Amino acid sequence: MAEIRNCPSCGEFFNYTGIRDICHKCAQNEEDMYQIVYRFLRKRENRAATVERIVEATGVQEELLYKWVRKGRLHPAVFPNLGYPCDNCGRLTNKGKLCQNCTDDLKSDLRTFEAAKEFREDIKRREKATYLADRKDN
Image 1 (spheres, rainbow, N blue to C red):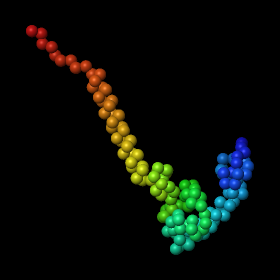
Image 2 (cartoon, one colour):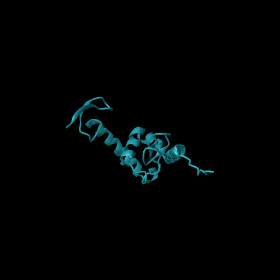
Image 3 (spheres, one colour):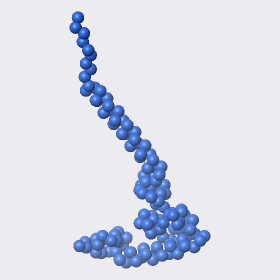
Image 4 (cartoon, one colour):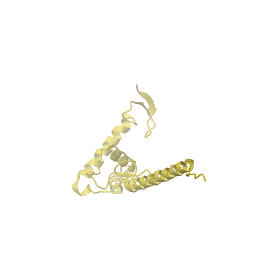
């Protein structure tokens, strides 16, 4: 069932059905801008254009470019200098929410945490253990 929402771009009311998060008019404007960007990138000399160059040449907002890359409408495999900012450091990435460096750092921190946790559990087990020595009755 559709619910009524305000369009984040223009503020108009629209029926949100779960497909688009903006109104029909703004979606049409976005689609027109996408076509402008896509035509720009299809030219051989523009395929390696950076986000800044695309914004400068087409007038499209950076956020829209990032949105299209995230949704898979613009593929970094075809346009190698496209990406979107890492949620942690802001460096451009084209897969997931984190760049490779932040992913590696997070994995390293998790390994360190797991090793420390295992070490603490091992110490607790040793402290609970009872040492029984053989007694010699004389």
